[in-house]
Image 1 (cartoon, rainbow, N blue to C red):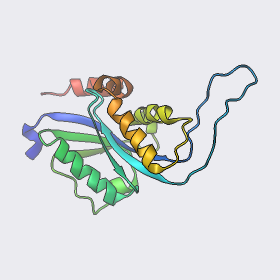
Image 2 (cartoon, rainbow, N blue to C red):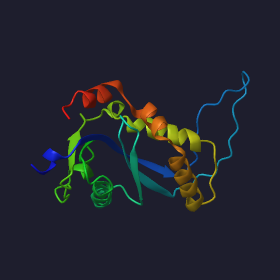
Image 3 (spheres, helix red, strand yellow):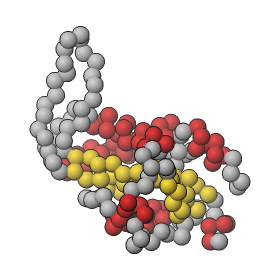
Image 4 (tube, rainbow, N blue to C red):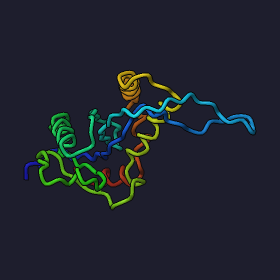
Length: 180
C-alpha cells in the first residue's frame, strides 16, 4: 500500500456558499429596539471548498463558481499536491458530487463519509459559522469586494484559532490514539 510509509493526517472537509445576500445575525440592543441593517439583496455568490486538520488547525481552501464534482475534483487534486508527504484521511458529508463515479481520488487521499444528515459531526461547520459571523451586517457592492474580504479573513486565522474552533475532542483523541 502506497500510503503505508507516510504519516497519517486527518482533515475534515466541507463547502460553504458566500454571496452578496447580506448575512444577518442577532445583535444586542436596548429592550424593544430592533437592530437596523441596510439591505440590498444580491444573487451573486461563490463557493469555498475547505479542509481543516482539527488537531493542528492547518487548513486548505479553494474558491469555485459551482458546487459540483468537477470543482470537487479540482479541490482534491490541489489538496493532494498541497499535502504530498502524508496519507490524508478526509472526513466529509454525503454530497452526491463527493461520490461521483467520474472522480479520481488522489493516491494520498482517502475519503471517509459521515452519516447522512449529520452536519453537527463536521467541525468545519463551526469554522464556516465563525467566518460568516465576521461578514455579517456588511453590505458588499460587488462579488470582487466580498472575495477580497473573505480572503483577508481566511488569512487572518491562526492555526491555534482554527484548532480551537474545529478541534472536537473525539477527533483529536482518535488521531492521538493512532499508531505512528
